[in-house]
Image 1 (cartoon, rainbow, N blue to C red):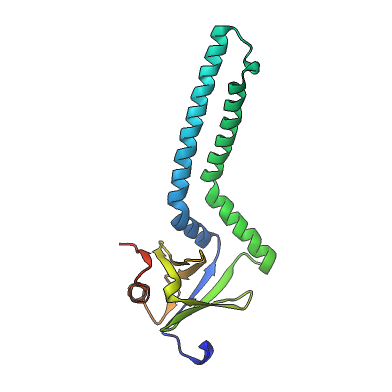
Image 2 (image 1 turned 60 degrees about the vertical axis):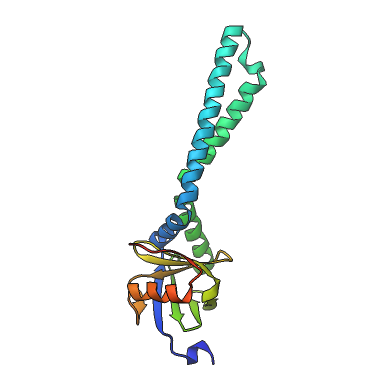
Length: 193
């Protein structure tokens, strides 16, 4: 029997926009981003320290600094680390701009509506601009997370599915958490307390 002939247990409708993209990015990548910034800062500090040592050494030895290979290596490393650190700090803004640009190019809009239907054995996501259906077996879900306004489901293939907390029809927020706990016992869950 096809999905459109069956009655879903409940449905969800969400419109993806800049705010939802930002929440998704923050939830999925915030820890990695923080680690990156700390590492970039540590390396940047190390290379600045080495550069100051080279300047002092050259001054004491009365050598021209531009002849020292370590000086140039430190300058290049500082430039690379500074660029990487700024990129990590600005990553959410870059991510949101990239998604917005892609959606505008593909669909002529940066607001994408997705309707999800949840059945006993799978979920079906229907994207409005493309009219595409994506079938998702509950066993493929590896992460079920929650933000202020969203639920985020992520598969082992790194596909991400978003659900609006206010977009449910036929179930409430706690009911959805319970449903996912039952259907995805092996998934890592990050529910809000």
